[in-house]
Image 1 (spheres, one colour):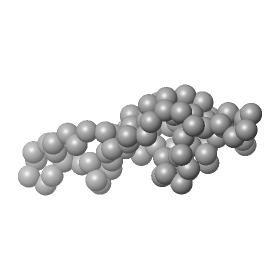
Image 2 (tube, one colour):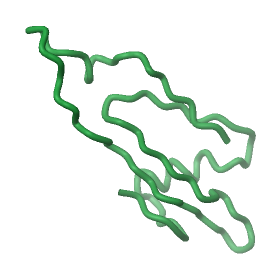
Image 3 (cartoon, one colour):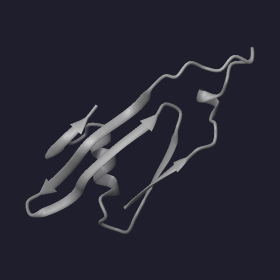
Image 4 (tube, one colour):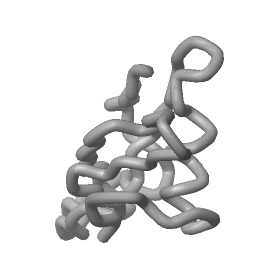
Length: 86
């Protein structure tokens, strides 16, 4: 599984019209060593992310790599077996 970040500016993090830079809003999504285990299968293994507000991110990987499980963890539809989602 790979996490792809798009570093282009989005409408939500572009500078205001008056030319002043926008204040740093800090990270909007942080995970710390998140893992999810189903029986003997480790679906997500020690994932740490620090995604700033306004960042576009894609998750790609083969079938069974843990993409859907990671997204379910991030939106709190399931609880991690280990680690923290801040």
